[in-house]
Length: 258
Image 1 (tube, rainbow, N blue to C red):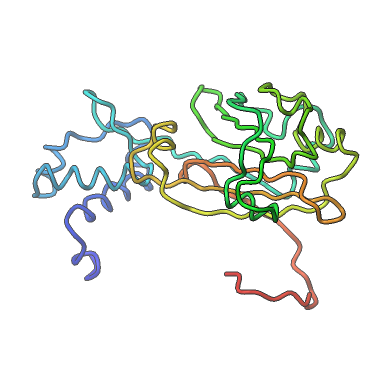
Image 2: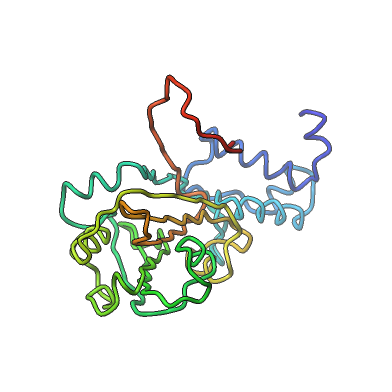
């Protein structure tokens, strides 16, 4: 053990040891962890310290506790999201952008835009927009994504997009059909943050778990916003994959990107 590891609180060292077993495959998804008393004996510590370690691992999404049964290793398979290809793929087929999940539309109607959405739309906070809220469930019926789309009233008010029903094809294709305008540019902004209590309850996550929050802004050829959408996932279940050409010449772009 390194000097740095020796300085860590005992519960962090226990969490590190169990995390290493999970990553090495000694503990596999679905395996039940030893009882807290057994872990405490192995590490020469107390049960409350072990419970602190379990809290760390639950917050990371590595384990889950089942009341009256025990603590189990979670399936940490991550779904891949390839943002750049999604529009092109959807233009070549019928159905939704994500056509492998069950979609539930939980709300459709006019609401004030949240401040961060209003900022993306370059409108005043509280501006009324058409909102479509959705939840996506995986093949096992587990909630995989909480999302919403925000559309200018000039785009969607009075149309079938105000109805709480799943649309027959990708939403952007519906908007293009309704407006005669074409999606031309997109900006994705992703933030890692702690889940709200409501999000943690919905995903079945422990309090303190993290989510990834994507805000996606799509504009037409003139730079006018056609849609702002957001997607929220448990941080341990999604990985972003991006493949792109590397310029051989200077592009003239600058910024403080990492």
